[in-house]
Length: 532
Image (cartoon, rainbow, N blue to C red; front, side, top):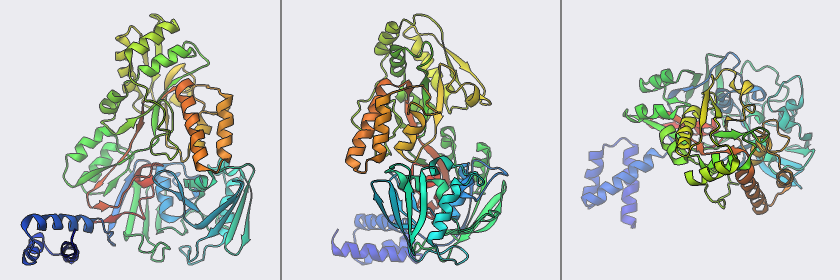
């Protein structure tokens, strides 16, 4: 682009910003000696740049997919996605997780560690709570230690247990000593529950944080209203004057509210609802690729699923591409029978993709000796889309003489009565903020949620070693080795990683995917603006 064209584009952008029409802009470009094709290109680029420039002002209404009288603005007690979105309007954490789940400084200006055990945080200067009180080390110490207090009843008490000591070590410094090394500790602090509250806060009928919005109203089970924090420590943010946030549990009602203009953002949309939204002018689907998956669970402590050839046969029976298109309308990426998804910084690209292969499946089933014995496979709406996935597997199995008998069970009681109890069934795992947390919860030999009862001492040792390793290159190789072990030997089949879907008015700008959840990892409020 030459200087003349660049200057013309800048001028057009300023004209559009002041409200000039397209005809006026083209007339100006013609007068400046620009040909029609060049003028069109400049106008398109200038318009796109203008649309991507944040604008201040406006008021919006946002509906999530859950609502309860147990709604809270106490970070320690959040349990639902609407809690996460609400609290992220009002509070900040010491760190935040970016698009690859890498921790970035937030209220912590700098982060240092000694052997991943002693962590020292310098606090950001110029940060104040909504009532004007400056952020101090005492606020951070109180916020972290309250998770260890049994009287608080923190949801994150297990994660907080590793904090052996939390203390102020200077007028602007906090030091945390862990009971064992954990290179992922900044990731832990970037999760939803570790948001920072004022020292001594026990009353959470409202929220007084350092976040982008001040709490104007909080009515559990009804709505929350946040108004712009004019003294927010991030220059220029937030952009919107007021956000009203509430839950509409019924998806049809939520979509209708969006399309009628009653709300501007609808969180938690299923693939089946996307066609209606995309077919309506003025609305868009926002896709977040994430680590969410529905997995095939084969218990390695039961018959016939304990047989390694049976397990391999089932994995080859997964027609991943058909599931992606038929069940999830394309809103998924192929999985490879290990749980770390491609958005994660520790995702291993070196493991060959396991294909859908009926010949190999038949070979392993014959080797397992299963014969014509009917094999029950339990599926339920509780494990998202598992019934549809089971039907596709049943159809494929019939082609090679395997009799899969689908046992459809209701959602009510599924997790207590069938999950991890039926020899062959399904699970549904939400995104986790780190590879360590994911693997520890679901694949460590003694994990309470070790779905397939897979036990591998070498894996356990490697998992603990990776937790202490601060060299990212070596750590990534460790996680790659663990993913390969799960892919090769565990009783888990992961055909796909399913996208999280939201919908919004086309006037809403600034959304970008954060894989901890929909709506930018529920942190949409400070980042979006209205393109009026």
